[in-house]
Image (tube, rainbow, N blue to C red):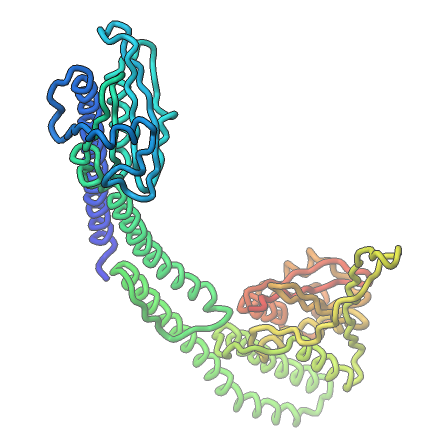
Length: 479
């Protein structure tokens, strides 16, 4: 596909051209029909004068006197028995009073219009004050011309003999011009749908690529993207691929450097432990060992945080309820005061029945399989960090699981914590610790890792004051 500039310019000119063509066809057909109806009107007005005075009929109209045997049938209104009458014979009777200024004042023009497919709605003919008889007949012939039919007209002026009028060359179906208004409308609609398809398809390609980028952090994605579409979209995709490659290289280098530091520090840390063990002063030996443990623990924490940022784990579908219950069971096996609190069943009130006046009620089924698309190892680490924090700063941890159609929330509440929600939210930054750093072990990266994992899953980490202590709410997207 070419660039949007070329495509947009082509669409604009094509729309303008097709619009002009459709408008020209519409106006041309409208003008042709107007001329056709005007000619029919003029022919009808002249025909009246021909019937009144015996003057020649207008061009395209033949007036023939009925033979004597058919005069009686026409006078009796039995037109269906006349020769060359279509069957079925649908008859429309019309009477036109002559003008008062005419020398045959009071003469009545009687018409019988015979068709095999319709009766004409002569009652819908408009009249105005002072309308003459020729005008009335002209409006009638214009009505005949507005239908695609081949009517046969019989007429009698006053007491004159009946005549047969053949005007199909003027108001018949073959005399009508080609009506291209339907073609113009169809052409316009086809062009509209074609242009809309191109525009929607192009915008859908951009929207699809944007959706892939938005969900990449949460659901993962390929190392590079390929797409079809306009030149501008391909340029955007190339730029994104270049950025992703650069970002992967930077994160990989960061991980390599930290892994190298951790590996290189392993040997001197081991020598330090051996030399520390030779120190006779027990108090000094314990302090040095504690410093070594803190140093190695801090490096491992940084590596864990970096792995979370690398986002190397592939997302997959899993049961969040099973993961949380298994994690709580592991803590309980070690004697830790951790409890999994199940959600209360949802009670649904029923309607009243004709057989009982009391409303019924029921409970929704307890859904154990809370299916989410997530990274199981990262998610387990995040929940473990929240439980560890609850045990560090409180006496016990209570874990709950809440779900709706779009999100799932793991809630961990401690008991007896002195921290408020505002205090803990300030500790989300890396290496930020509270005031009790001397009595509580840690490196200030636990909550940072949890917040990073929540962001990877399209969610967030929030805190609130619970009934017994501080509540941490880890929310993730289910899909």
